[in-house]
Amino acid sequence: MRSSAANAELALLLEVAGTPKPGNVDRQRDLADLRFEHFLAGAVGAREGLALAADGAAVGPAFERTVAGMATQKGDNTQFGALLLLVPLVRAAREDLSQPVAEAVVRETTVGDAAAFYRAFDHVDVGVADPPADMDDLDVRRGSDAVSAVERHGLTLFEIMERSVPGDDVAREWVQGFDRSFAAARRLAEADGPVTDRTATIFLSLLAERPDTLVATRHDEATAREVTDRAEELVADDALETDQAAVEAFADDLVERGINPGTTADITAAGLFIALEHEAITV
Image 1: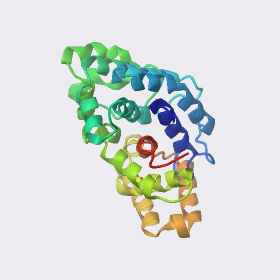
Image 2: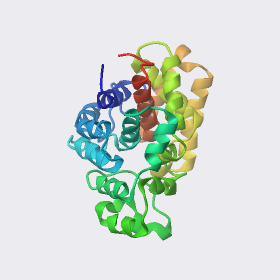
Image 3: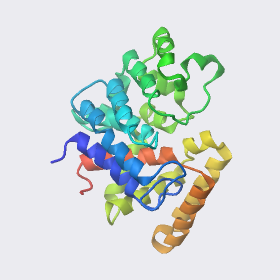
C-alpha cells in the first residue's frame, strides 16, 4: 500500500502524463520554457516535503520544503499551485481525507505557516496578480522580504488565502473546503479507461465549468472566458468520444498562443490524489 506522500507524488506524475490537456504541458506537448521532464523532476523533488506533511509537520514549512525540492529541476515553477493544494490534503489524510477535516487543517494554520508560505516564493517565480494598493507590503512576490509585514499584521496562512479570493482559484479551494478537488475525484472514479485518459477528460470538464484564474492573471478575463467557452463546446459535443481531433487542435492552439490554464491542472492533481487515497482509482 502506498503512503499518502507517495500517492501525492503519483498524482503529480499522472496529472502531467494525461493528454491532451489544452494549454498545459503533457506527455505530448512542451511549453517554451517548461518541458515534460521538468514536471517529472518537480514531482520527485517535492517528495520530501510531502513526506513531512504526511508525518504531521505544519502546513507552511512542509509546503516550503515541497517547493524548494520541486525547484531543483531546471524549469523553475512546475507545480507550485498543485502543491499548495496537496500539502494540506496530505496532512488531512493522517486523520481522514474528507472535506471537513481538510477544511479544519487549513483553518488551523498559523502566522508561522504564512511566513513559510512567503519564503516559498524565494525558490521560484510564480504568476500572481498585483495586490490591492493597501496590501503592497503583503505582495507574495516579495517572498521572505514580506515576512515581517505578515507577522506585523498577524495573518495566518488561511487568512492570506481568504484575501486572495476571487482572483486565485487555488486559494478559493482552501476557503471553500476543496469543493472542486473532491468533485474532480468523484468524476475520476466514475470515468472509464486508463487513468491518464480520465485525467484529460476531467481536466477539460473542469476547464469548461469555470475560467482559469492563471489565464486571467497572465492574459485577461476575456481570454480566460474564451478558453472556458471553447472547452464547454467540446464537452457539450462529447468531443472526447466523437472528435478527439478537435480537442487535440484546441490543445495545440492554446500552446501556440501561450495560454496556460495551470490552475485547472492544479485542481486536477488534487482530485487525482483524493481518488488515489480513497482507492477510487487504481494504478
